[in-house]
Image 1 (cartoon, rainbow over the protein chains, first blue to last red):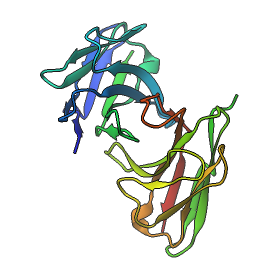
Image 2 (image 1 turned 180 degrees about the vertical axis):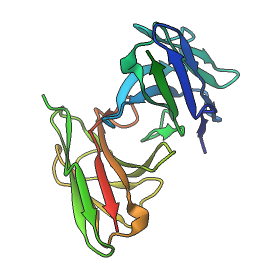
Image 3 (image 1 turned 90 degrees about the vertical axis):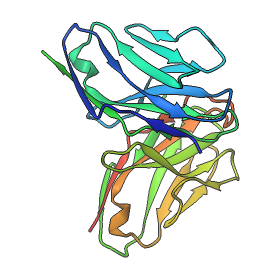
Image 4 (image 1 turned 60 degrees about the horizontal axis):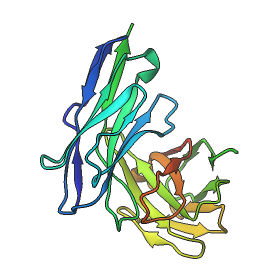
Amino acid sequence: AQTVTQSQPEMSVQEAETVTLSCTYDTSESNYYLFWYKQPPSRQMILVIRQEAYKQQNATENRFSVNFQKAAKSFSLKISDSQLGDTAMYFCAFMKPSGQNFVFGPGTRLSVLP
Amino acid sequence: NAGVTQTPKFQVLKTGQSMTLQCAQDMNHNSMYWYRQDPGMGLRLIYYSASEGTTDKGEVPNGYNVSRLNKREFSLRLESAAPSQTSVYFCASTQAAGLQETQYFGPGTRLLVL
């Protein structure tokens, strides 16, 4: 069974600074998909970024980028120029090719400080 | 285009009462999902429907039933609510299961069982 671990329950960063959230996972699959979702206080789940394991190039989406290390089974999220609106829970999620659903990590609560 | 909608937003039940959580999507997606989110944990899959007319159990199906009423709607029923079912429930949809499409989430339903 796949597992997803986020070792940082809480983090904080000053506005305009850069922060990196960690995620590791365990799988025997060679191909799979990884996601970062953001959950603000409104509780809506919002897709931040997605990475296909067969792609070596790290995904980027504006201020958000990932560092995908397949051999180490690591998938960290970097947020550049942090903004107050980035304050939220961030969930790392895994999906295998034949899978029907995500396996989510426990989340990291990020606070952006003014 | 409303995306994924859920009703109600908040509900209080007494132990033993029943209720149905409603979910609808207007994106013509084939697959729909029900998750629950407990404090300090990621989302866990309750049931999913890969396509209209099919439903399958997820990780935590006990105490729940589902109905895929049509392509748009996927309901979750608690026949006899228990305090352990106090949680936030999220519905999600995707174009097709197994294609690793991004899942789109509804705003959630907060359920309190006394």
